[in-house]
Amino acid sequence: MSANGLLTFAFHYFFMPTMNSISFDNTEYAFDYKKNSELKNAHFLFSVIGKPWLVNLALKLTPLAIKWKLPFVKLILRKTIFQQFVGGQNLEETAVVVDHLNTHHVQVILDYGVEGGGDGEKALDQAAAEFIKVIDYAAGQDNIPFMSIKLTGLSRFELLEKLDSLMNQLEGSLINKYLQAIDLLNEEEKEEWQKVKKRLHIICERASEKKVGVLIDAEETWIQDPVDALTLSMMDSFNKGRSVIYNTLQLYRIDRLKFLKDCYEASVERDFVLGVKIVRGAYMENERKRAALMNYSSPIQTNKENCDRDFNDAIEFSIQHINKISLIVASHNEQSNFYCTELLAKNGLPQDHPNVHFSQLYGMSDNITFNLAKAGYSVSKYLPFGPIKDVIPYLMRRAQENSSVSGQMGRELVLIKKEISRRKQIK
Ligand SMILES: Cc1cc2nc3c(=O)[nH]c(=O)nc-3n(C[C@H](O)[C@H](O)[C@H](O)COP(=O)(O)OP(=O)(O)OC[C@H]3O[C@@H](n4cnc5c(N)ncnc54)[C@H](O)[C@@H]3O)c2cc1C
Image (tube, rainbow, N blue to C red; front, side, top):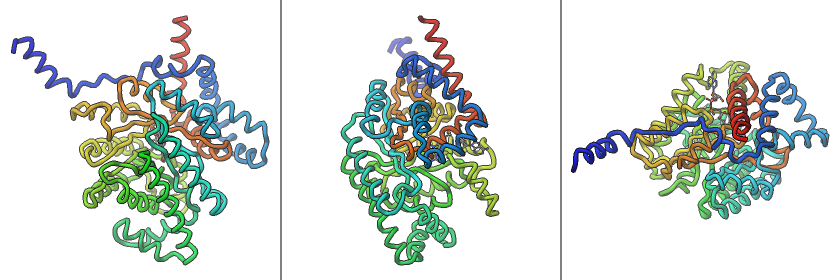
């Protein structure tokens, strides 16, 4: 080999695996999918929801206005926040957004936005039927590898809460506590829980047949234990050799890094692939409020640094075991997304590794999504759809998260302004 050849080989061998050139600054890629008028609408929306007093007022009034069926409120929502964060009111409307994202190599996690228990068993059965429709639709599309579910869309909230509370009074492993807690329910509740399990089982079975991943969202800690146990039992049935079912781990919780490691141990022992979607967590204020009110120690990290540390450690642990863990990094944090791309490079893993996926919410952090897609990573938008009244809780969380208190709104506005001015310059 010539000296030059040797140098090239040495460069590639020692440096290439750790080189990682992704940048999230390119707003041309980030907003290529938006017309000028859409960009201006987004600018207006983020400016308005940047005002915390307005968001607080809207959080109080909107649910009432929807309850009183005030038609102009629905129209305003539809033309503003709904359009920014939601795919459409039904699958047909949403398909347009799905196709548009596909042209930019962005995949979709489809979310039928029902949450909060519905009105009785009939509503829960209907929600399950709707989830099956979503799976069938996703299976026929090129770019929908996953759909997501909230267990509160399949179960009465109070039943989950009761199971969780019973589990907390018991000793042993998560699964043992879960099985014992079911035994402690009354006959009517046992029957009700059987139906919840059956609904989820039918969904997972169909998803497995159709090769669509099912992501179970994480919700409040006071209902999460039975959700975790049921999700793990579904993984045990359906994640043989490949991951179909994914649990969501909120790393703002003090105990979740250990939980990830425990779940990994269990998956090795039971020989299934562990599917995990990692998030920081969306219910911090309510968690802290409830803990203070009911006088128990808050399950949430004491500060953001600890939350960030555990989130990044969860990425690192998953990458170290990537043959047995299927990981979804669900975050708008540039540093965490960058860290994951860096770990892939450092470990000589391809950008489109089948067990590593990135995701951001539709309407947010386009700079991360579209720059990752452009660089060849497997990345999606989490895309909710559904009638306006059903997606209100989701929209309220987005408004809160994007009000100026949290800082996310600032990031979005800066990027949008940068792109508007870039487009003006090239005219
Ligand atoms: C695709 C996708 C799916 C999601 N699914 C779920 C889900 O199933 N369940 C769920 O709960 N959330 C879910 N989320 C929302 C998520 O949990 C976060 O609320 C949101 O993404 C903001 O966190 P971040 O990682 O993007 O970044 P950042 O903006 O860096 O972090 C903000 C987050 O850090 C945490 N935090 C902020 N301050 C503190 C503090 N002082 N102490 C401790 N922690 C703090 C909070 O969780 C806050 O939301 C999802 C997000 C995405 C992108």
